[in-house]
Length: 114
Length: 113
Image (cartoon, rainbow over all chains, first blue to last red; front, side):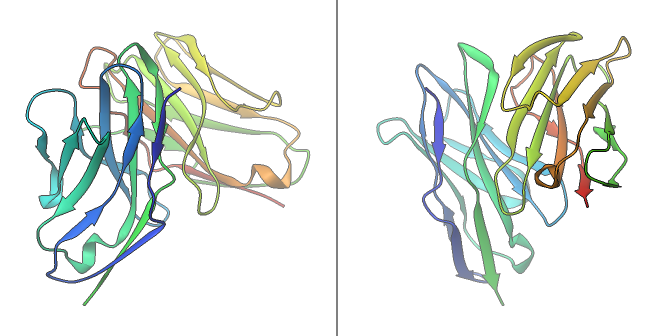
């Protein structure tokens, strides 16, 4: 069965510091991995994805994520956090063999303090 | 660029009433998904359509039904509304042969009183 885990309900960082939001996944076969951001009362916005190729994926707003197959992780990172990055972040996975299924993690609230 | 359009954005209903939510996917996208998001929760998959046929079903109550029409827009019909149905309902679309990501609408907030 496919699943995604985001072990932290909340991450607090100071503006200008690097941030990491963690995600681990469980899927049979090769995964498609995604990060989305959600601002209050808004839809989910696509940030980046990993399908194949380079393990370090760059996305929107300066975010990047590193795919680690041995650790089944896909952590979201940003070298220097902004207050405007404060939002809810969701990791998601879909399996190549069952492309209709799209599984979300429970979400991590990122708080960036000035 | 065109995005996923959902209407209405806000809806207030009484218990046992019926509600209909509409979704207009991005042009040329062939797959539509419906999700329900309760307060402080992750989106829960309800149902999906590929080329106007139901492709998968999640935790959609029997009181809910959905369809996709010939112009690819989709409607989620909810009957015998309960207080617990109060949530944000998201529609998302994708192109099955595309990069795999879903594109979400801004959501319809349903409040059941």
